[in-house]
Image 1 (cartoon, rainbow, N blue to C red):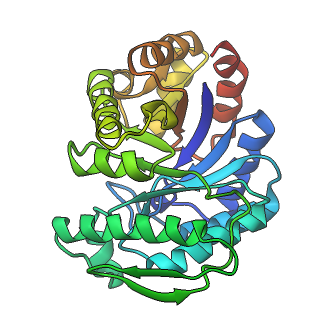
Image 2: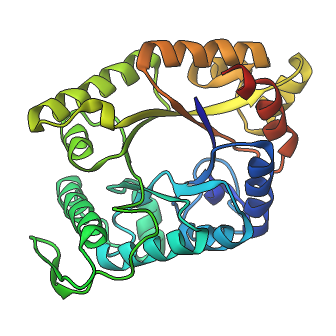
Length: 310
């Protein structure tokens, strides 16, 4: 199983904070460092010093790390036009030597849009735009050198695009789609995704969603095995009860609640929990949501006592 660190910088983190945990994750042997793409804090935190832009952050990390993969879980389609986003991701892929992955979603958090003047269409239109963005971004990357890309959609039109620059990873960097939607999300995953991620769900609900994706693949003649299965879960692990309680308190969650919704407890309990997830859902990759990003000992503990057993 691949282990990835997943952070929520909108809750309060500077670039230097993110660099510290990304380097710690790389040094500890994690497969990837991912971050959310949000512009406004959630819940009862200050959010200070304020948001950091996901792709500016990843561009910096691309030059200040060397082996760990980097990506978003997930970029909101409402935040960026598809052509410029394709350019941005391709450039960061070049800057990293081919270590970037694009998680892309439709956008959902209304308050951050109104706070920063970002248009927020109704859900149906957001999904229509999202579907067009996926087709445009992957189409631009797949266009052969010297050829032109054209697209005539309801919301976006591209004419004679040179489709440059090209990412290092060919034909495209991995595209991650995720969520709990029962119809359009699995269909888009079947068409465009290299990986499907179920975030913050129960084992049973995740298994059902993966089956919806597999069925959607069947309807278009794609092998479901081509899409890697992954999950995102909040993590809090301690060597003893006191350490576990301290980590749970630091992120404002009761220990028992974390055991229900995430990966929490001793390292042995974490291994058992992840084993259940792997057996019942077929996941081969886990995104561990680390909410206290200053606690680098937590990252090192997972690497030392959980990862080797999986």
